[in-house]
Each structure stands twice: as structure tokens, then as C-alpha cells.
Amino acid sequence: MTLTREQKRTFRSLLFKHQDGIAITATIAVLERHAVFDFLANERITSVENIVEKFPQFHAGYLNVSLRSLASQGILKYSVTVDEVQIEVTSKFTDFQRHIPHYVHFNALFAYYYDLFKLPLKFPLPNIDTLISFATYWSDSKKALQSDTYFQEEVALHLEGVLLAPMLVYLGYNADLESVETSTFLKDTSLLEVLQLLELHDGNTLTTKGSFLFDRSYAYGVTTSYMPIMRHKETYLTGDFLPFFEQDHLGNEQHVFRGINVWGSGGSHATYFNKFDAVLVDIFNKPLDEQPKGIIDVGCGNGALLEHIFDLIWNKTQRKDDLSTTKLILIGADYNKEALLSTKRNLEKANVWAEVVWGDIGNPAEIDAKLQELYDVKLEELLNVRSFLDHNRPFNVPKGSYAGTLLSTGAFAHRGKQLHNSDVAQSLIEHFEKWKPYIQYHGLLFIELHTVAPNTVALNLGKTPCTAYDVTHGFSDQYIVELDVFLDAIAKAGITIDPTHSYHFPSDEISTISINLIQ
Image 1 (tube, rainbow, N blue to C red):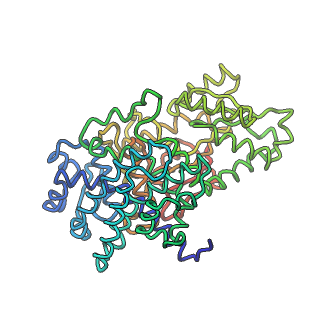
Image 2: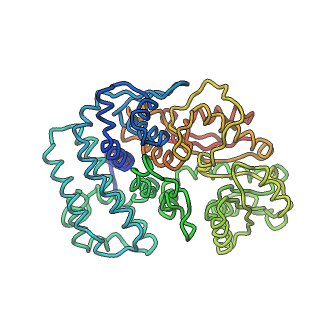
Image 3: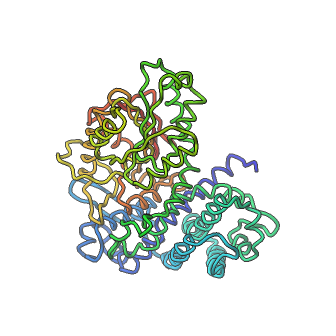
């Protein structure tokens, strides 16, 4: 399928707006149920503190995340100062209020998909009449509101995302597991009816839109993997959410479908890893005495990154010629013991020599001690690598006070409590200060995720997945900050950023991903 540049732009925008819908729909339903929007309509300008005072049933941290997500959609204005977080309704707010019932109606789909994702793939899909009913509602609403520009360009796409994206993820994820072709799906007449209502199938074959979205179902994977949070948004905002941070009796996380998360991130991150690879090739093409003794991946997960790095060094660098005489040390570290077992098993299967060690990203000194005890190597003798992990570290209350001038516009929570943005910044500085002694010789090469100011996101709807990532990470107690805040924290920790190995995606104006080599 060959697409024009304009078609690619349109469909990419659709992908992002679909994810926006997944991120905000459950939030809108809960806030409407508690009459928060009526309060905002009357007040016009208020603060998170005042809203919590008016609605004490809410957990301030997750309410803050929710309000910021609506600001990223231009529905509210969100301003962070040292003293407070101010909330103000915008000119879009009145139009938004008229369409709240649509979001409330579609919120029921999260319960449907939450249950579906726990089931193996089978046809017809369980309770397929539910999907047909929602697809009919969507199609009828689009026709009835043809002259409503706001509905057509934003609301309809949000609703479509809630209905369509999880369905494509369920089909794509299970198809990859079982090597099922897309054509198999199209033999199910009930599913075909849904696809036709959603304009993905014309009765004979997939439409251009349908082919594009089926081929990129993985792009919805990360956002959709947090379906447990969307399904239980009421509990997160007003109830006892703590059990979701515990593992079930099988050791599985309960706030995220981890398998889908890994599947989605693996498909979406290829572009970034091309740059990552280029840095590694430079490092392992240096003279042998300038190279690190090996590599440690803190947060190794299933070992896929280490396997990839070994294959890269073997096939793309001069280090291959020295592997027989000077062994390359490969170590996977993770906080999750099941992940360590998975890494060990997968790397052995791939015939990659590697060791594993339990490690907490927030305690590099302990990792260093274990490496010396178990493998007679120091952490500083290795190249540290990691992907999308530093924002997912456990929050440590900072020991010092933040003395910087940059203040993130992010919304941060720890177990429902609202965190002050200056504490998040100082905690990040102190995190890097812990790592400084261990990366000063061979460095830390890592990929990181960033937020973008809500007013910037609102001016660029359809160009960034920020709203979805802010919600999923905010409700799972992760701390993504803007690129400039992130780089400032590294500098304040006394660490140098290699300018020749520093990349930002998708652009300098809207940077949601960065790759940096620091030491």
C-alpha cells in the first residue's frame, strides 16, 4: 500500500487523536459524575487545591493528572507556579460540555475490553453485539452532527479511538502470538459489520484507512496496555487504588497488561533504536583499550535489548575480532526477579553469554557491590544502557531543596498524593548524582520519554501522543518531565552530555523522546 505524504500525515494524526480519546474518556465520565465540570463552569478560574477542598473524595495527585490531560486538549488552561496549580476554563469548554454525554456513554467500553483482554483470541468475539451497538452509535452521531466541526474533528475521533484502538490491539497482539493473518479476521461477519461502520472496510476489502490502522495496531499498544487503569478510573480518583500496585498470585502487575505493553513498545521504538545503535557502533569501533569491559542494562526486562546489542556488536563493529581473546561482559539488572529469570532464559536460548543481577535503579552503589562480589567487575568499568526507565524509578523524597529556576509543567503523583514539581526536579537531580561516580569513565547511554507543556500540546493536537502518555504514566506513578528540565537536572548533577550523541524526537519544538550519552 503506497500512501501520499498527505495521507500518511492524516492517518498519523488519527492515531494520536485516538489515543487522546482513550486517555481522557474515563476521566471525563468520573468528573462529570461528581459534578466537577459544573463547579469549573461556575468558578471559571480556580486551583487544584480549591477543587480538592470542594471535592474531598478525590485523591489530589490523580485529580491533578486528570485536569492536566484536559488542558492538553485545550479544554482547560493549566498553570504551574511555586505556590499552586491554577485551573481555568477556555473558550472550548462550553462546546466540550455539550458533548460530555458521548464520553460518558463510551466509557462503558473500558469494562468490555478489560474483560476481553484476559481471554484468548476466538471468533466471533465475545458479546460482539456490544461493539456493533457502539459502532452504530458512532456512525449515526457522525451523520447527525455533520455541521458540528468540534465534534467531527475531535470528539468523534476520541470516541472512535476508545472503540477501535483496543479492538485492533486485541487482534494484532493475539495474531502475532498465533501467526494469524488479517484475512482471518475478515471472515467473521459480525466483526466485518463493526469494521464497515467504522469505515475500515467497504464490503469487499479493507479501505486505505483500514489497511493503515491494521498494519500499525502496535502503535496503540502502550496506551491500551493500561486498560486496567481506564477501567478502574473511578477507584483511582476516589477509592482504594492501592491493590492495583500489588502483584497478583501469579506475580503479574495489575495496573497494566505487561505483555501488550512490551509488544506495543517494541513495534513503536524502531526509529529510536536506529540512533541508539549508531552510538554503540561508535563506542565499540574505538581502540580496544578505550572500550568498556562490557555492558549492563539496568531494567533489562526480558533481555531483548542485551540480545540486540550483542548482535549489533557481533555484526556491525570491529569488536567482533576481539571477542575470542577479550570477552565482552554482558549483564542484565532488574528489580523484578521474574524479569531476571526471563532474561537469563531468553539469552541462553539466543546463545548470548550474559549474567544477571538484582538491582534497583535508585541504588547504583548496591548494584556495584553485587557486581564486584558476583562477577569481579566494577559498575564503572561497564557501559550503562537503559531504555525508558529513569522516569519509572521509585520516587525518593529529595534530601535537599530545589534551587533551580526551571519548573516542570507536569502533574506528578505518588500513591495518589500530589507531588510538588520542585520536589520532582530535585529528586531527579539527586538520582543522577547517585549515578555520577559509576558513569564517569564509559558513560550512560539511554532513551527517555518526556512530557510537553499542555498549552503546546493543545496547539498541536494530532501531532503528539503526549496526552495519552501523561495519563498512563501519571496514574502509574511515573515521572516524565520536559526535555529541558531533564537535561538541566543532568547538568546540575555535574554530569556532561555528549553533544555528538544527543538526539530529540520528533522535533526540537515538541520533544517527547530523547537519546543521550552522558558521563
